[in-house]
Image (cartoon, rainbow, N blue to C red; front, top):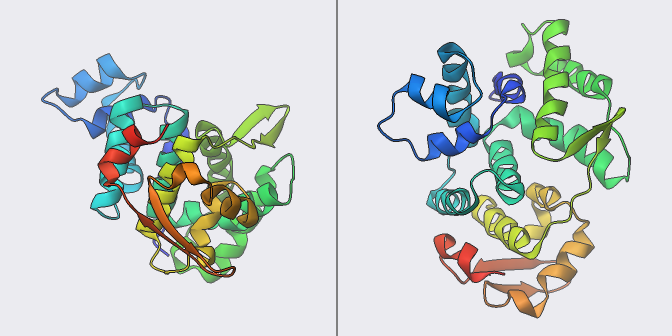
Length: 248
């Protein structure tokens, strides 16, 4: 695995507007961006966040993903919809984030659990440390910090909420966001049958519900699908940069 400390950095970032600022970099100097457009207090902190964003958040698997993300962010800036796309893209770029999602968060989410504890994340990291050389020099303190920042990062992406316990959110994915997810999914998945994709977990619905929803007639202007009962293939029928304006 390619392990980085970006989860800790992104979990500590106080102002996610910096993502939108970096997407549309202009001639402003770093201190001007930091002082006038974010809540980040020092240039040193700004540079740490900038590096993590460009490594894990605003890194594009292909041109389709770039078109999808840039269009959505330019339309809505930092919003409910864009935060989900940023979560998907960050999980694609950051192997440790995806590992924790797949091994801790999604099992809890899909089993209907209400909360998630830091100790569960830390235990997962300790198990990973035993088999992953890149984590061999991480101390127990670092693992605990990463576990805590991971939960905070999920909260920033609207996937957790604090109500005494650290509760798991069960968000409703609206039609526009659902179609954005579908376009993201087919762009990052190499398997023809999307039902075999590990990324399908990121739709926040059971596989059967996903199939029923994607078969709805209202989406036929955006996708072409072929479903045989155990195999589902999806093709986009619109350019990625045009999707946002075409779906209600």
